[in-house]
Image 1 (cartoon, rainbow, N blue to C red):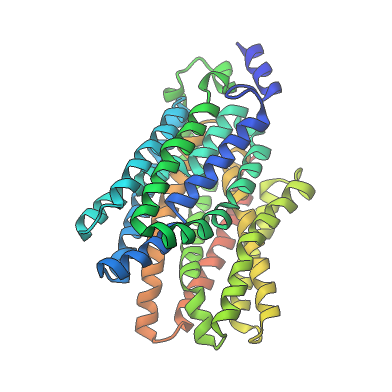
Image 2 (image 1 turned 180 degrees about the horizontal axis):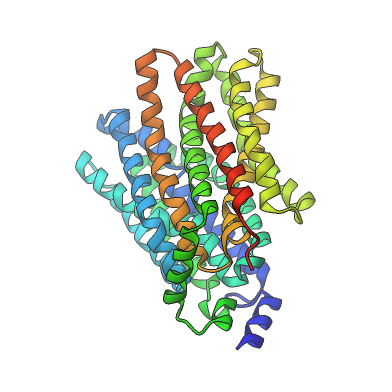
Length: 415
């Protein structure tokens, strides 16, 4: 059995046959999953608001509900992938996501919209980065998954670049209802087809089963109990939750925050457009120049950038060049942080039960990500300015920094 696993690892086998096809297939599917299930929302929601008369808080409340439910689903989804059900989870999730997108295209009542988006939120937990990372970790073994996870984030980084202009074009031609039908078809055919083709449980490396004669479910529970006793786990959970809250609030409020500071809209939009490519650029830098550095080392440096960059947005002169520079630094750090989050479990906690433990780390972060924009809006209403909001976001970024440093101090190299 162990010889077969070793051979599978050496070839990167399974699915369509090669490591490159496996990652490439997952990568294309991730672009489509992220583009249709996540990045599409603001444009579709704005078109819905003009057509159906729903208010912006009503529409974005559905997005918050979906993210919160994605957090609740993260652990069972990860545990299912640990047990070898990655193909069923991701391909099946894409099929149901496609059907719900098509159902969304027929919405005229707010209650039905909330019900559909609750389902879409649950399916985001089955189709976006975290389950894909778990599938990669299961294929190559968690200890050898880093290059695959990094490559996958490079693919996913192009989701907004591809889908935001595509959705704008589709809305102009077919309206928001027709656009949702197209996006539903993308999930049903392309996403489900690719996940079904490249995720092959028979090709997965499962070194933990060679070491210990337990079923995957029993082994997973044993590992989860052990990890929950590590201070590093709780420090990482706090770091990732604080980061999700700060990042989400900052993302949703950066545009009006900069306008309030006196920047003109064109300058703000141009600078914000830098963030996406900078995320990909940061990941490429890690791929090329820091492939041997540990996640502890990378994360310890990267988390220190966030409070400084967020403060810089509020302190720099009102011109495009310095604003774009800060946006590039922030974007690169955020792109690298995705890799840190993806590899923290095998490099700082354990190389077993990746999906379940990563799901536990992800769950509170997704809930915080859902709640933070609304909480920031309430803070703005209370103070009638973004000063208090900015202070809260900087505080969250600082908490991320300190918590990750504590996790790095207490973590041990998994064996």
